[in-house]
Amino acid sequence: MNHKLEEVKNSLKKYGQEHLLNHYETLDDIHQQKLLEEITQIDFELVNSLYKNANQEAKKEKDQITPIEFLDKNKLYDDYRKYEKIGQKSIQKGELAVVTMAGGQGSRLGHDGPKGTYDLGLDSHKSLFELLCDSIKETNKKYDVMIPWFIMTSKENNQATIEFFEKNKNFGYQKDKNLFFFIQGELPMVDMEGKILINEEGQIKLAANGHGGVYEALVKNKMTNKMRDLGIKWVFIGGVDNCLAKMTDEVFLGLAIDKGVCSASKSVVKVRPEEKVGVFCKKNGKPSIIEYIDITKEMAEAVDEEGELLYGESNIIAHLFNLDAIEKMGGAVLPYHAAFKKATYLDKNGKLVVPDSPNAYKFEAFMFEAFGEIDDMVVLRVKREDEFAPLKNADSAGVDCPKTARELYKKFHHLD
Ligand code: UTP
Image (cartoon, rainbow, N blue to C red):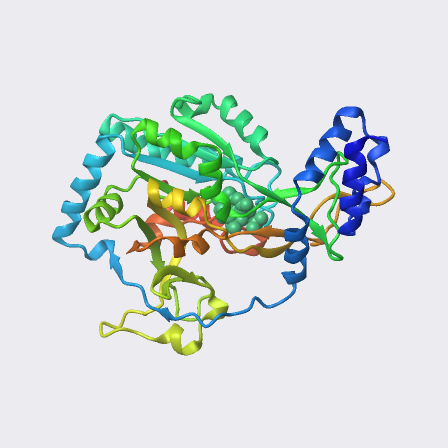
C-alpha cells in the first residue's frame, strides 16, 4: 500500500476522522493525491479544540476595560486643514495603499458569487467592487497618482473574483502592477459532531479563516514586501461591503501621521446606548473592541463631562496601519470564534447535501483581536451618513440590505 496513504490513515484514526477517506477510491489519481496532501496539512489538534470550544462560553479573563480617546472629524476645527495637508502630501508621495477584504462568504446576503460582484441596483448597475474603485480613482485623479489596490480573496472565490475583474478590464487598474490579489488562510469546517466535512469534489471542505486572517495573509503572500518595494508606508484595510467607505481619506491619514501612531480607525457613534454593536475601548491599556454582549448597561450608558458616550464609538471596519504594525500583527496567534453556517457537503454515501439551515461550524479570527500587538491607535469619529452604508443582509431583513445601502449611497451622491 501507498506509504503516504498508510500514514494518513493512522493519523485520521488517531483523531476520529477516518470518514475523510470514504470516497478516496472513487477519485482519480490527481484528486487522490490532492486529498492526501490536504489531510496532511490539517492541524487536527487545533480543529478538535476549536470544535470543543464551539459551544462553550469563551473564558472571560479579568481584562481591564477603559474608554479609548477619540476625535470627531467634524470638530477638528483648524487641525482639519493641517491633517488634510499632511495626508495629501503622503498620498502624492505614493505612500498609501488600499486593501479590500473580499474573502467572506456573504452568506447572509445570499448572492451567487463573490459579494464584491453584487449589483447594488443603482441606475449605473455598478458592482460593489466598482463603487469602491470609483472612490479610489477619484483620489487618483485629484493627485495624479495610482494608489495600489490589494484584494484579499478566499480559495473559494479567488478565481471568480479575478474573472470578474478581467471582464471589467480591471476597472482601469493593471494586475500585478497596481492591482494585486492574494488569498487568505483557511480552516476545515466541521459538522455538529466535530467531523470534518467533505466538499462536492471529495476534498476537504475548507472555509476562509475570518477577516482576522488578513495580516497573516498579507505577510505570507509577500504583499507587505511588495508594498515596501512600491514605497508604501500606510495601508487602509476595509471590507468589501461598505459602498460609502472613504479609503483614501487625507484627513484620516494626516491625523495618524501627525499623532505619530502606527494605526488609526474610523468609528460612527452608536445610534443609541443599547445598540448591539462592538465598540472601541482599551483592553489592559491596548486598543481593542468590546462586543456588545460584554458591555454592561452601566457601561453602555456612561457619558463623559461633555455628555458623549464613553463606549459609543462603533467599528465600521475602516482601519489604517503602517507596515510595521501589519507585520507585527501578521505574526500574532489569534483566537478563533465558531460561526454556525450552512455548508453543502458529501454525506457518507457520497450524496450531496444542500442544507437550508446552518449545519456546520466555520472558524474565524477577528481583525481587532490583533490590536493587542500594537501600542496605540487614534479613533476618528466620522458621520454615519457620509461613510457607512453596509450591505450584510438580503432585502427581507430590512436592515443593512441592498435597499438601505442603495438609499444611503444615492443620498450621499445626490442621485435622486
Ligand atoms: P462579515 O463578517 O460581514 O462576513 O465580513 P461576510 O462573510 O461578508 O458575510 P456573512 O457573515 O457570511 O453573511 C466583513 C468583511 O470581512 C470580509 C468580508 O468579505 C467583508 O468585506 N471577510 C470576512 C473576509 O475577507 N474573510 C473572511 O474570512 C471573513
